[in-house]
Length: 123
Image (cartoon, rainbow, N blue to C red; front, side, top):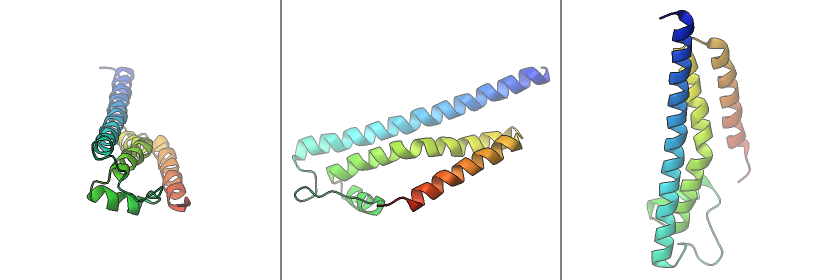
């Protein structure tokens, strides 16, 4: 196999890994969100009094542990929001495996910016 064919194969493999990661994230998110919706329909309550709801990741996780329907749905949405971040993480590993250090360093920079933006976000 020539170098061009090997490079093309590596790129295709990386795209497949990234595609599977995105699909898995969306599938897991949809499943968890649907479980929360079914819990809500079956119980008729959100799990929170009045019009209150969890506003932080910590509160969502506390509600998830006791299967509060609204917290379960929100955790599914949280996973959906984190899926593209996971994709960037998978891209870093893929670029390093391919020894494409320029793209790996660019992707690490993007990953750090994403993480910092999540940490600095207001609750």
